[in-house]
Length: 502
Image (cartoon, rainbow, N blue to C red; front, side, top):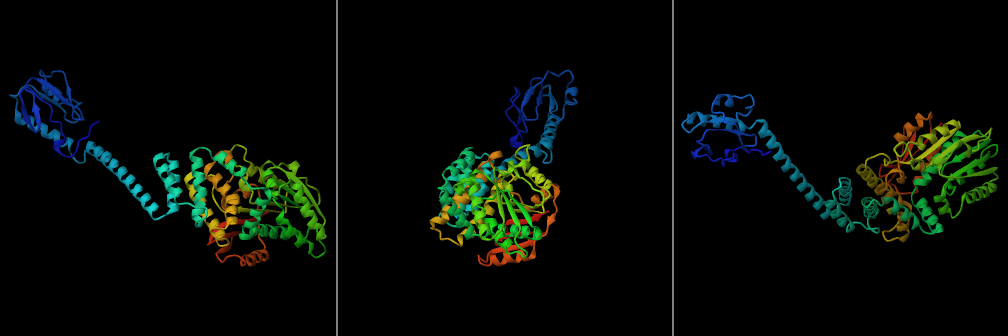
């Protein structure tokens, strides 16, 4: 449909008639005929209505006054001129529907072009000033919008802006960029698996994990806060059973065994069921029997009666028969930075995340401890998830930066082998292949309460101990207690949350 601008020059003046009479830029034909103007201004031949011109002029279909009967040039030219002027005025009325429609279309196209120009200018300026965060987010949005020209341009620019030896955001940006490329190529899963295949020898990986453990207090914070809640809840028990849903190296329990060995009246009998999967087995360079042997040896040195039961499986696959409960034992359950790996209702109809919590509740534990990263990467849309990941891991990389130089090879190894895989998985993978699915503590709280749990208050004594330990690290770390939970942060950004349930 053709639209009309707000001046008479836009009206068609190409209609020619035998009489060559021009009125208001129109040539009027002298032969008898009926001319109808369609709303787009084009002529439409009509059946000759000479016998009753008035019927044609006043037809109910004459919405725009467009049916004009001209029987001859001897008709009243003034009347015809007035009619044309009325018609033209109506068509060009600024507030008419047609004018509005044209104006909206014109302005809409102009606005869209203006927005595209502004976006391009904004991105160019961000690149020139080296605003890596803004360019990364823009690239993620372009991929989400399937805007391939912008995506290719920004990826090319980003290659020049990131570096595994640069500032924290440049180092993180290098891994986030690889995640974007993997997502773009629909190869997130294969690249994620390739990253796992390129893991160093288990002894080296264990060394990198230990370096991260010593350099940053995130794991120590989680272990100490959980141990404090367990020790407080089971302080009067003589037989204790601890189910650890991701025992890893078993490091957490060394401190607890030592603390319980000094308990007045003698230490309790301790039995630990350690659940873990093949990934941790690779990092240990051996199965769970290695953890059992190490803990058993330490417990013997502390004169603590001890048993270890191995559960070689993914925690999400655990069933009641895998947990081997015994009468007379007080039960504690530990979820250390592992529940976010358990798929929920957003992944499949088998909601193992809530199923596992209901299973644990059915065991009537004295206490259940939860330590999780304070991030939202589970059900958030891709761009929002990308922004969250950028913000969260920037703080992590900054905290690592205070312990290592930019050129330190061990720092590069720690970031590549202990953090990069998680970042790539969050960005590049979807569905069941995306296993890094963090939730904020508020969401975890809802899940626990729906499963029938109530909050277990954290011990002020242990909280004070954790605060003392943090003083040995950088002053930019923060510790906040809120709503019965503890939050460890970097520059007041909460990164790890800890709480207990009963």
